Amino acid sequence: MTRPPFSPVSERDLRIVTAQLGRRPRDVVGIPARCVCGAPTVVATAPRLADGTPFPTFYYLSHPVATAAMSFLEAAQLMVECTELLAGDADVRTAYRRAHGDFLTDRGLFGEVAEIAGISAGGMPTRVKCLHALAAHSLAAGPGANPIGDLALERSSWSPAVCQCPDYGVDEPAEPAVDETSEELSG
Image (cartoon, rainbow, N blue to C red; front, side):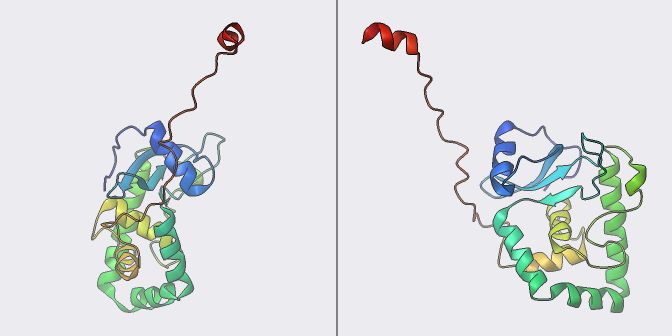
């Protein structure tokens, strides 16, 4: 887990994230959380994309098994339970508001975007909207950073401590280039 500033993103990281998402990621500014094998688990995305689009979800869960686990928890109504917890527990509300502020601070290091000012992700600071974003924040910022993200990770069938990565196929050796001229001469 890493909060900004991030180490440079490698081309290999981008190839893995492309395999994870099924599309090339946009405007990645860091890899704040990784699987124990080193593959990206969370990407950090610029708050304004290159095409000018505001992008509030700074921490984005990319690991396919983690993403599936959060989708399962959402389908199992964990967001309803978390919303009730948020409504009934002042300490959780305070920690969730702090998480919201920390998220905005981290994103703000990459530029202020007027259209998303004060908007974080996952429903923070007053509701629970997306466990994927909240778990990504917890993974990026570390345990205790986001109480709802932490709860989702605790309930998850996925663990950041155990590699469940598929073979992304990004380390395959490149096909050797064929020099057609030399083949014609030798044949």
